[in-house]
Image (cartoon, rainbow, N blue to C red; front, side, top):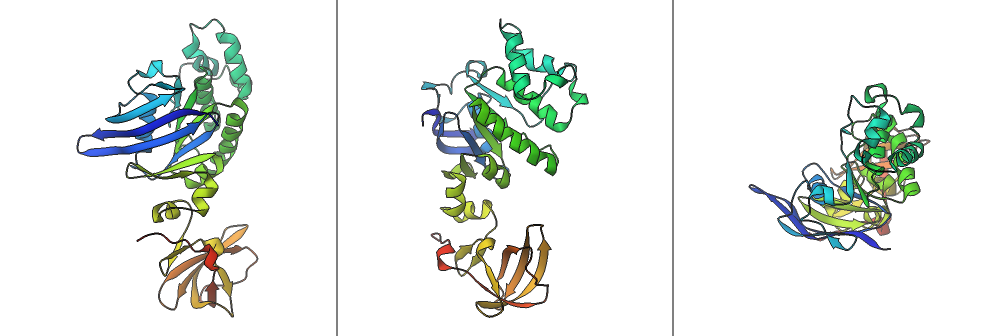
Length: 311
C-alpha cells in the first residue's frame, strides 16, 4: 500500500516538558489509523502537529511526498474534526457544511453529495441545537469531508456521546471511511474503539510510540507490559501475562483458589479469583457457567497463552 502520511523522528517540546519524543510513523492511503493511549501520552499533540496547529521542535512531516511541517494549516490538505465539533450554532446544517466552499464554483453539487452520503439531506435546514449528538457529529464530518482532504484528522470525536450512541456512530464512522476511501487518523483513549475501527494502531505512552501494528498484532503479540495492559485486561502471574479469556476454571485441575467476585455481562461472566498464594486473577467465561462468590475453584491456562516481557 502507498504511504500518504509520514512522520520522521517528530518531537515537540513545551517549557519543561517533551510532549512528543521522536515519533516515526507511516500511514497508508485509504486506511483507518488510530493513535491510542492514556491522557497526556502525546497523541493529541501529534495530531496538532500534523494539522499545523503546533510546530515540531525536531523531525519532519510528509504528506503525499511533500514536506509540510513548516507550512501553515491552510496550505496542508488535511482537515480536523474536533471533540466538540465546533459547529456554527446560527447556521443550518447546509450552511455549516458549505461554509468553507463559498468561493468554489461546484459548491452546491459537492455539498449535496456529502449531505446525501452522510444521510443528512432531510436535516439540511435544521440548526445544530435541533440535532441529536450523532447527527451533529455527522455534520462535523460532512463539513470536513466536503473540502476533499487527503487525510481527515479526528480528535476523540465520540467522547461526548453516551455509550449506546457511541457504538452506533462508531459503526457509521467505519462504514463512512470505507465508502469514501479517505485516510482517517483517529485519536482516542478508548481501546475498544481503536480495536473496532482501525486497520492499524499506534499505542503511545509518555510521548513515544510503544508499538504500532494491526489490532490483532497488538492484542495477541504485545511487545511490552504497557501495551499488553492497555489493550484489554491482563492477569500477571509468576512473571507472565494471561488474558482473562485464556483462564480455565475447574473443580479438579489447576491452581487452587477462591472466587471472590462475580460479574454478569450478558454473553459472558467475569470471575475474580484469589489464589492460595494471594495472587488475584480474573477469568472471562460463558454466561452459562454456574459458580458463585466464596466457592473453591481451580484455575489453569495453556503455556502457549502466556505473554512474557523483558524485565
